[in-house]
Amino acid sequence: KLVVLLIPSRTDTKWWHRYIEGKAEIHFIEGRLRFNYHKMRSAYPAPYGSCFIIYRTKKPTIFDSFPKSYPFEKSGKKK
Image (cartoon, rainbow, N blue to C red; front, side, top):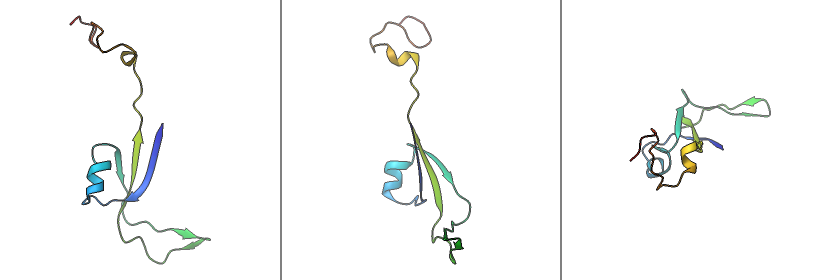
């Protein structure tokens, strides 16, 4: 599963550090965004920088199917 967000890049806020930093891929957009409305370009850019945030689910591996008490490590060596 994949979730992509287009959000303001407010790196100085609590919510950024709580929900974004270290928990998602961050792709900053150079410059300021402008939006079109009915083929008319906005006269002014956004007053803040923007970024794409990407959350991905972890791909399962064969080792995820073993119980935690299984006597082998991922390398195949016995504990």
